[in-house]
Image 1 (cartoon, helix red, strand yellow):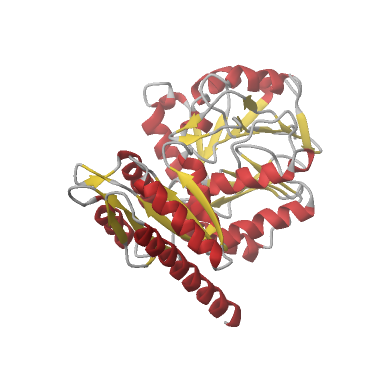
Image 2 (tube, one colour):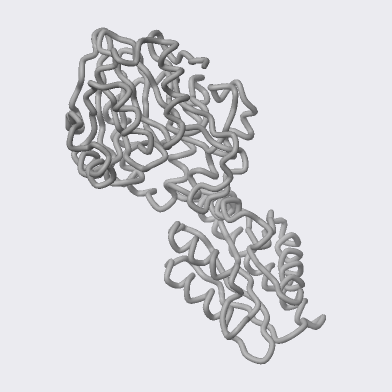
Length: 407
């Protein structure tokens, strides 16, 4: 199988998963890749493994570069199973090989593979600032705990100015082309944002610190090889994706509103359309997502990219509609910040749905507007109230944007 060069003697030898459509609840409509990197220096080194079942694909690509039995090191940047699932199989095929990982990586490998040969593995533990000479190239390691697991670390190939940050700067995107600039850049950055929104959003504080450390270390970067998706090599693209991460960690977003709702007998949908109209009347952008019909990953992306999001639900059994409840659980885990939020919806004989949504929004400690709740089918007066509610949200958003511009 084809291998792809990043730099002299550095190759992509990973696997392409065209058919995966779910990644622990995150819909991957464009598939993904599991990226491994081979350095054919004096001491040949494989950086990162792949998901279980994809090992043979990686091994065939390695075989186009060198004899797999000549590989001396296997670097494990992160132990989650989409990277490590193939490790027992690969280690058996590469043996003897030294596994290089962080202290927490070693502990996690033992927990995952105690019954799959771990006791016989040769483990070398490294930490931030440690280096490993391969010949003409030197690997430098940077521990980045909770980006997005405690064991996570970056590997930097100093002389090649190549950063291998595992889950940093990735996308769930299957492609026959390896580099971002060989693909539709609108799709690449859309998937990079969706990846951040659904996987990395809760870890913004840690990611911000990591970006600061990379800057402090003065790392020169010609290529970024993430663990999923396409690779970054053009200076303008590298600068853009790093800046995007910096913005996302600050929860910077466009002054627009995402209306996120579901409906039972169309009453909450009618409210949504009226609220949408009110927002538009104030000249503020708005997008509408109906839960149950829109993938959760796309709704999370809307939250990342919007300064405000409003959640609408009817009441069912004195609570939220199940689809809304699932979203509230999901967004609570992602922990967005610096957002204007609000709850709205309709009820029949008894309320409760809007109250539950409002309670979750309160727990997130976001800037809230007063909730809006209507009984049964909204009248014309009710819809006018919805329009005005939407306008008030838009005006508040504009005031915030004006204040930020002056600051």
